[in-house]
Image (cartoon, rainbow, N blue to C red; front, top):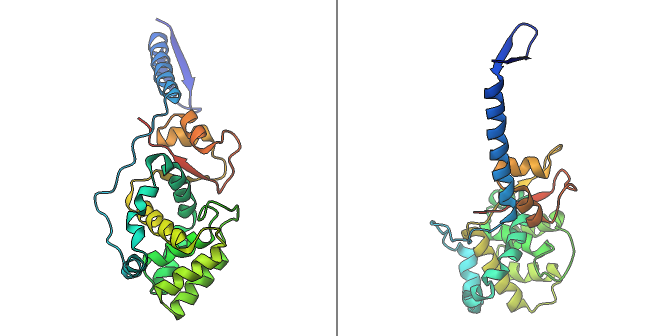
Length: 234
């Protein structure tokens, strides 16, 4: 029986029989091909609500009284629109920690952080291409600390958004979008680090590379700091 020696160091060697080596290589190739073939079927799992849903905070309760039609606005977010919501979730995750931390320091409710982000992000009205403006969001939070009135805050955020929508529509979408982002089991967001590739990220999260690439419309053009949606495939 032939034996192949692989020197891993100058002092030790590891012996592997040729039949065993061929067998291991074959099994590895089968496993790789099985994983790669899954990339042809990128069926996303249905988005579900979390088991523990956070009750509305004080600001949200005030908004609900002022804009009761928003209680029915969940119907606006049909299942085919969850892609829009997931993209917004992707943008929110890039700034959530900083905004939530500042909101806590300023003794404002969590909904204030969402409102500040919603007023400045590109997808807030889905009618503009402006990038998220952290400086503007921070200035709004500080303004609301000095004058913590939820109705006035909603109107100030709406004015900052430069949305073409009516205030009632904008406020309803903001409220329902915020509640859905908080209470739906949305996909994990991965922020790309230096040296990472789509293939490596896909292997780490055990998802087919093509599914990851298609979901984010990327392949080999990712950059450090990019936010990638990790698809929940089955």
